[in-house]
Image (cartoon, rainbow, N blue to C red; front, side, top):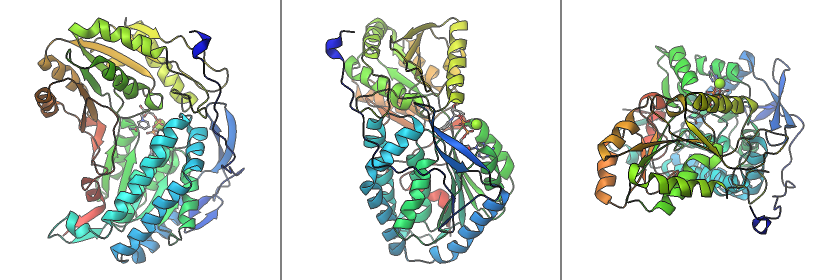
Length: 479
Ligand code: NAI
Ligand code: MG
């Protein structure tokens, strides 16, 4: 591409973040070393530079954290809703005040472009706390004529793709409904959760209401199994979701699971193609495709296939991949080497199974974990790249002739989290939305989020809803 179109570097400053050499566990309002004395390193996936040492919590630490949350529950659950709302509102305000720090941290620790962490992750996290501050004293209106009681201690396990935002989705409804929390962030992205702990201190949240414990899968497994936990909320892989479901079966613990997806993004021949291209690009390349509701299967009506693919290939060539802290970057780093290996394996399977690969011609940085924007055409429904979640910047394109065929192909998946429909006809949007087995159906847009709108899946994408009035339900006992 002509150098006339190159952008000068525009890196966001990292001056406002203060990353400590090592962190503690945040239990009962104080910072402590892990009982085991064991730490793990967290890195910047764009540079492989070590950012900090993170404690690995074991059984003793989990016991302490759950005990602190149980103790705090006694008072927190009795506070008037308007008092809880004040704390939640303050948290939202401080997230706004510290938004640049949080966005830079999120980008450094997770690899996502700063324009996404700055314009989506952090503002949506604040919005989620604002929204739930509003519910805290109105639960009797959320559930008219019912007695509404909190459950107790919520064990919350979150993934690495939207670390702060998933924390907000978990913690805000739990606190609004009067529960207390022990949350474990993902092993690759603990820094914004630990910074959130300092926000809890800053707003004077009573000790033990929010506890943050770090560690890998083993720590999470201990947390969800703890007998004094009443509610488990998990976002992550379908595999671990099933394991958690088995582990707590019969315990009486309430469970919500938000798992994987393989969403169909369906383009009809009357769709405005240029807008659809933007929706397709957003659908699969937003956050490097590390998105459970990513539009990873593009279904194109045959009549517009050639025109659409030509436009898509052109658009791929304009995406800028590189330094996630650069304000012009569209595609950042892959979150971890493990995730990069998974993407490479599935792309290899796509090639072996005979799909046709197209990749934008973009140089990859030497250090760090990177994968170029990738499109597969000639994909059939039996290919692994059409069935399995890749969780990377890889789009599989299939075609269809009739709306019935589009529905049949879209629903031919074990998942059911989201879908997109692109068409000029309002009636067709409604017809499709009725038939698509997906928790969210976007029409002529994609990846839109609002705290008032419930989000969640069908089938292997999990159960339970987060956001909106529906998202309060998993945290309350209704009398
Ligand atoms: P994962 O499901 O292993 O990790 C998610 C969270 O669960 C992390 O905090 C992890 O420490 C914790 N965890 C792991 N094993 C656990 C256990 N036995 N008990 C309790 N907690 C446990 O996901 P992973 O391995 O990072 O990614 C694998 C694949 O999962 C990805 O390639 C992607 O396809 C999918 N995924 C889906 C996400 C979503 O948003 N629905 C988020 C992250 C991953
Ligand atoms: Mg895993």
